[in-house]
Image (cartoon, rainbow, N blue to C red; front, side, top):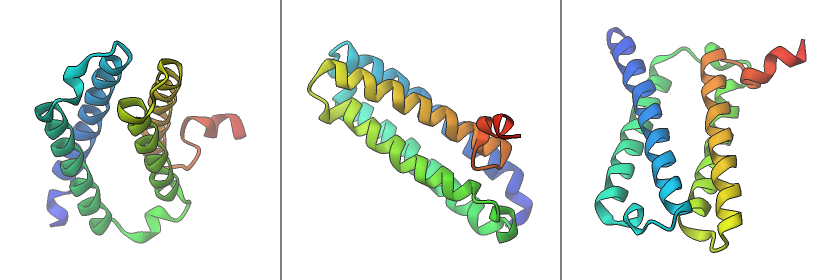
Length: 133
């Protein structure tokens, strides 16, 4: 299975970008009170992408040596994933106040960006690592 690592990693990266893009579009629609972003086909597309993304992540987790995760970058990414999903749920469903919805949307995008920098740097601080030296 290790021979498929490059393809699985590439699929994971592409699915992460696709998932972020779909959330961005749905979030903009939610901010503009667009009802289409809550329709079943759109939600199913989002769920399918996220399930494929999680599957690729779990496969990568089983393929990589555990020493690679020694500095805590993966744990930080998982914690931020929970924060991102929570903010996304508030953006798309729970926030009734447009101002709260907008705040949750912007924060979710910032958390998503931070997760990307953590994945690229393989460091729990991601982009902020440069400021700690």
